[in-house]
Image (cartoon, rainbow, N blue to C red; front, side, top):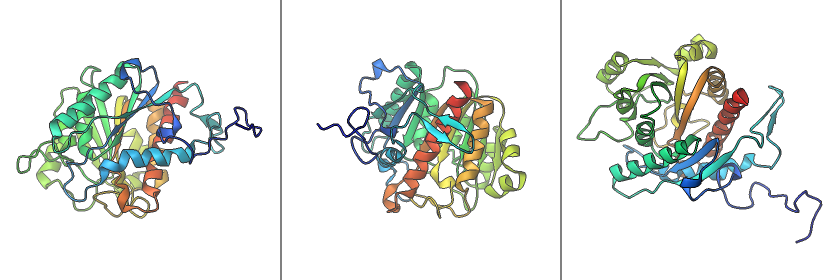
Length: 316
C-alpha cells in the first residue's frame, strides 16, 4: 500500500474501519481483559413500556463515537487547557452481552456476567443500553464493593415497585437499586412532567434515601450546588438520554420536553468526577430509529467520552 506521508501509512478517518467504541481495541476473550475502561453493549429493550428500539442503541452509539476518533494523542480542550484521554488511558470494547429474545432474566444475567468480567479485569464498566432495565443487572454486579451512592440523570423516577407483575422493566430499576443493602442512597436529577411512577413511588423513594430534583430546581440552585448535594465517596452514574430535552435528543422511547441541555449535564459530570470515586457508568434509552440526524447517538458518545476524560484526568 502506498505511503502518503502518514506515520503508519493510514489516515484511518472516523468513517473507515470497524465501529468499536471510539475505535478502541475489541477484546473478545473477557478472561484476558486488562484495561482502565471496558465498554459493554446491552442491546435489550424488552422492558420498554412505550416505544421500542433501544436494542439498537449500543450499535448506534459506537458508530457515533467514531466521530471523535481522529487518532490524535488524546483530545485537547482549549477551555480547560487539558488533553483528555491520552494513550495512557486504556479503553477496550468487550462487545455485547448475549441477549435472549423474550427472556428478561437470562438476558439480565448475561449483562451482569459481562459487568463482573469488566470489573475482574480492573476496568470501570461503561454499559451502553438498551432500556433502563439494564441498570438492574449492572447494580447487581457491584455487590462486593461496599456502600456506594447512585447518581441518576433522567426525566423519569423509575421507582415503580411492581405493576401487573412486572418488577424488572425500565420503570423499576431505581426501586430495585434502592432495595440493595450496599446502595447508600440516590440522587435523582432531572425528574419532571408526567411520570411513569405514581405519587406513592415518590414518597417511597424519599423514605428510602432519594434526593429528587427537577431540571427547573437544579437550574434555580445552580450546577455547583446540585453537585454538592451528592454524598462523597463511591458513585455509580446512570444516564437516561431522555434526561436531555428532546429538542437535542429526540431518539428515545419516552421523550419528555423541558429537559437538560448539553452543558448543564457536562458541567455536573465534570464536578462529580473531581470529587467522587466513580465505579461504574451506564447510558441508556438511545433509540436511534427516532432520530434520523444521529444527534442523539452523537450526544451519548460525546457525553461518555467527556466523562471518561474527566475521571482519568483527575486520577492520572
